[in-house]
Length: 269
Ligand SMILES: [Zn+2]
Image (cartoon, rainbow, N blue to C red; front, side, top):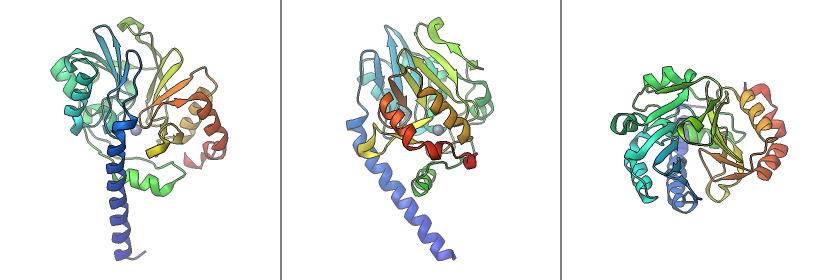
């Protein structure tokens, strides 16, 4: 490829990227407002932030982008709570669209941040520098890559998790589990028949939000794949991803059968 072709190609990817972002934002108001008792999605645009409320005790799973903190606070108020009431924040992994508001909440409201121990160096540094595209749709992977935000305000988590961590000690009948693969120390949270999976899988784009898809990026795709296959056999009726809508178990199993070849392709390691 010569230089002008290269420039044309990167301009095209970037334009498509913007279109993708704008369309995502336009549609987000419709698809991201689903709630049920004591569980709300206060995310914005293409990412989800889950709020669990137990009377005046509030926990967030992930926190969204660093430049969308005001929007997150507005969403929290909209569902009837105050940002200052957020006592706990579980961060599934260190990507900026998940940890962006962590430092702000910790400094301003004394929110206690829970994260995997292996994510500590990047949390304290406030930046990461590599992402491996693993989605079967390479063009979509490149578009998503062009939109990545690589930096966030650094912070030091209050509680570092090594393996399994029971949240009942903080008033929530939920458990944190380590699932390595998307990043070195990614976490998921199980709560009865629900599981909050971070970026283990994602929902589809636009009108396919509730259809499971392989996430764009993974540090170790083999580990991601093993975890998806293991979790699909467990009694979690609904998976709550970091991006896209709620995914029903039967759709996950169907997705798993359909993508078995890609999931078993260890060439992505
Ligand atoms: Zn991620």
